[in-house]
Length: 404
Figure 1 (cartoon, helix red, strand yellow):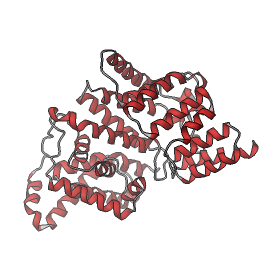
Figure 2 (cartoon, one colour):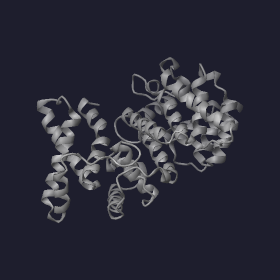
Figure 3 (cartoon, rainbow, N blue to C red):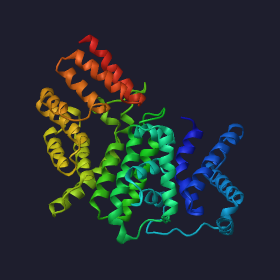
Figure 4 (cartoon, one colour):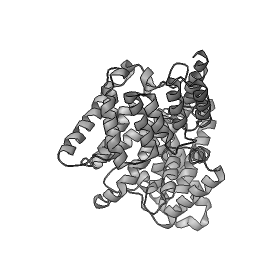
């Protein structure tokens, strides 16, 4: 990834959020940000990066937005208001962060759940409409219409650009946490694009998680999500080989894990464990974080306490009885009780077409010596993922079956 592209990815969330705060319109903000980036590509190609790329983009985007408002006579009143505001209006809400406020706008209850996710991935994560369409398995024109409707709903419902009042946060925070986690996961294992791991998205999700933690320090699920992301991010540099292949947990160099992030994440998990002893039942993020804490506590893969992990998955299934959670539990059971037991659990899950289901079946069949069946599952897994690093890993595993 070029330095210019890295700047765009780094600046995009704050740029769009700043423009939304200034002009109060998602369409104006997104179009102006896009035009500013297009102008940067042209100017920076010959003149190089300016001393302050973010400031250059913000200034250019603001001018682009004002130009658009001047061209639209029907919005003359809004144009006059924008021109008069030499200094952007003071932030509103309990947190002074434009990107977090934009996320609360995108996750407003007035929007349908799928629209919230799509809008956040577009405006906060900076994914293209085509990338989001592939993630949702819908045609690009369908996703474009969905995004347009969502932005129109924000405008028509006059959803304010602010974090909710503290008394309203409880009913809104669940949706926000879900979207933050989706942004993190898109960075952890990108479903689209050339980069298999997008550190800019994982870093932004963690930054938002820290802000939410400051906002709601006593919320167990906020702490749980932040811990989960920290413990997962701690392994990022060990997850990709020099050749660009995904490195699975059992093959990772644990000496390359970020011990500071692990210590921070495990401290949050310990805090929530103490809270559970006081009668506060853990939610899905806290339980996932606890599983991450067990993994990162093991000095090597074979020292992993699989019994404890299975117990945690048992509790997680009660809170979140999804087939994906059941799949992850089956993987842990296979480590504890053997691949035949794990495969029986996996085969009963309605996940045909899901890349992780096929990849898990392939590995368990491999361990059982059923090479032909494993080869077919590797093929299915490769066909079900667009992540280049994951495809390389699966292809290598498939290729090595010939030696068995």
